[in-house]
Length: 475
Image 1 (cartoon, one colour):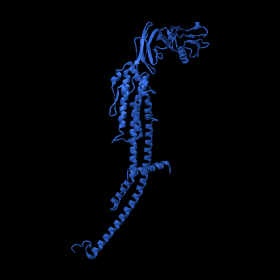
Image 2 (image 1 turned 45 degrees about the horizontal axis):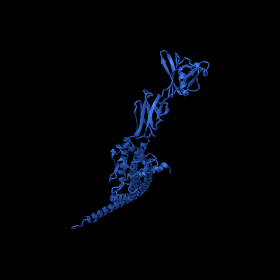
Image 3 (image 1 turned 90 degrees about the horizontal axis):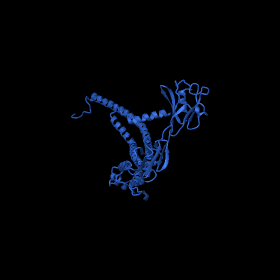
Image 4 (image 1 turned 90 degrees about the vertical axis):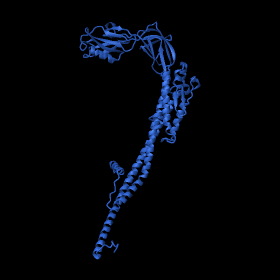
């Protein structure tokens, strides 16, 4: 038998169970026979119902595991956010000079004070424009027609720009220079005096831009320098520094300096990078909220109305993770902050946390630095606990997901057993129904014979005695 016919048979048998046929008989005992059939079906469904109850239990477990997985994942993310504070998230930077702006722009920023002075130049780009324009950028030749070649100098050795008889024009030259990736960008200026090629260096600095018809003869240059670029030059704490951008990164870790065009060499700015209470308070409040949400979810699995995960070891393991977070103690070297209570977090008898925000907001810069040291990062301090929570909540390899997958597999196995039982029940039902139909037909036949005999006897009584012998009262 092929696969398609097996599937068709299974579907047909399951449909019989889902929509059982009503027994219709012709004898006076047909209703009794229907009761026998119905009772037989009910008894046969007892093991199916038991399996369905087990299946429902597994489905409820999967639902609660999903809720727990979400709550644990939110807690892991909240701790991760805390751990990110020490890499710039809880630091702000200020400048004493409005012409020298400063922002904390990335990881690696640390508290400190820096002096920016002697801004001798700002970053700018070199530019050059063709000395003579052309009447038609699509047809006027720009390179010697015998070679169709020009030589581009952009701060280094000449680079051959090879044109063809068709591309030996301003449009073709623009495209060839841009395709050469030689450190400059070409464009065409269109004026009443003609069309001109202009080039701008891609990087700040004193880049000399030339376009020669003879690579060995600088007098054949077709370009005129408009501006010779420069790099930004300044001192940081008295040490010379340079940058190819006026948005200076990498000089002060995790901090971006913004040099305003109005900045002069006589200006001096004090840059202060310090801890900021706001992000710390926000991250702690989020952690408290997610902890309370997780505690509420875990609590549903205990007590008189415990959920389907009651007694499941994974719930107890998550409780242990929560205790690790709630009662985490910092190292001796982390300064004045040694526990969550030092950050204003307290635990009620109900198991719910709360945060007194004034504790963080009233901390000095040194105390905030101590708080960040206690919080740590992804590998140290309180922040390192995020890895433990993620080990349970990861949607691919987490321990909770493993249980979900296991329960879903078990649920499918139960469904397969239910389907197999229903197929067997369907077959038995058909067999029993056929037997009862045969019995009903036999009963109907016997009833018919009985009626015929009764009618014959009554007829004989009337013939022989003139009355029915069955009516003897008063005779």
